[in-house]
Every structure is written in C-alpha cells, then in structure tokens.
Length: 247
Image (cartoon, rainbow, N blue to C red; front, side, top):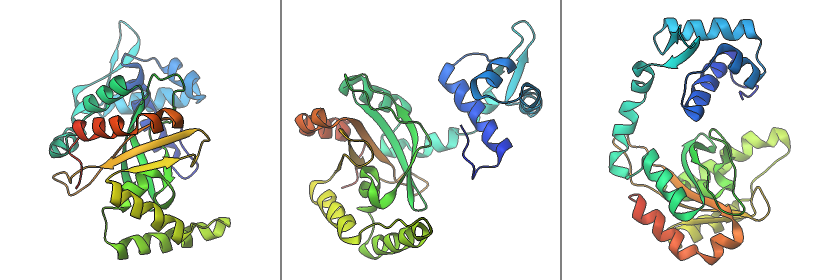
C-alpha cells in the first residue's frame, strides 16, 4: 500500500505492478479494487490508462488485464548492470530455499536502507517483511553493511544528516553506537543485527561489489535470531557463495 508521502496515482500504479508480480497472472479491475480498497471507478480509469500506454493489455476473453513485454523491458537494463555483483532474483530465491531464511536485497536511499526485493523464508519462525520497507541506515544491519563500505567522513555526515532529519520527531541516533556496529561489521566482513526492530529477529548481511552503474547492494538473510546465531558461519558462507561480496 502507498504511504502518505507518495502521490496517490503514482503509488497505485506501482501497487498494481507489484501485486501482479506477486500473483503472476491476469487480474481484474474488481480484484484490484477489492484487494487494495480502492474505488472501482478509479481502478477502471487507472487500468485503462496503463493499458493505453502499452504496459498492460486487456484480454476480452478473460475480462482481465495481463502484463506486456513492455512492462518487463522497463528494468532490463538494471538487471544487466547487476551481473558483476552476482545478485539476481533467482539467486535470492535459491538462498531462501537453501537456508530457510528470508532473503533480502537492499539499497541505500538517502538516510535509509530500502528493501527492494524480498523472498520469504520457510523456517519455523519465518521473518516477514515487505518489499519497499525502509530502515534507518545508521540503525539497521543492512544499513551498517552499506555504510561500512564508505569512508569515515561519509559515515559522520550520514549520522549528522539522520539526526537533523529525525530531530523534528524527537528521535536521535547515537554516534557511538553507530560506529561500534560499523567497526564490528568491517572487522567481520559482514553485519549482524539483533533485536533491532522485532524481538527475536536478526539479519546477517553482506555488501556486494559495485554494479556497472556504480551502485552497491546489501544482501541479507533474516529470521529467527536463535537460528541465525546457531548457524552464523554457514549462513555467512552461503551469502558469500551466492553473491560477489565487497572485500
């Protein structure tokens, strides 16, 4: 679902695209309206507009909308740029299958780390998080993994910038705590967050080499903290075998 800071129509377009990726089939106007709680008339106009642009097509036989190759082509250049990192959706799906943990792909986005792709694990205590979720760079495991690759002055600027932005809400990050976690991440070669957002849940993360667009990605395995601690070495090795880690 879209957040208040996102323009409503733009948010709804991507809600539709992400839902279609999740269900992987044709969808009807009524289905979209009921799933998201949108007015039926608004969804009719939205879907017709996306279809007119060529990203969906209307199947008269099924009375439903289907994605077109034009939609698939939107991000093909991004996927190609990631080849050197070893990261792909298939790799994340394999990681989740092999480890039972939730596999997460994350990028740095302003003062946040944002989860751009998530494959749910199948462990006994499955860690559930949605694509698009944001966490503070300075206060999250994958954030520490990404920050650890930068020079110290950049880290200091991000701490200051985070506190400037958070001050209106009465929140602050503690520089000493941030630096402790980054030093530990650099020393180990991976991050390990424990009980940060949800009690009993953790994330082990590595940072990839840069892609052809000079971007780095955080790749993590999240799940039951006890299971992560018990299998820490093998999970770290699984991440390193699956992707091309930085350092």
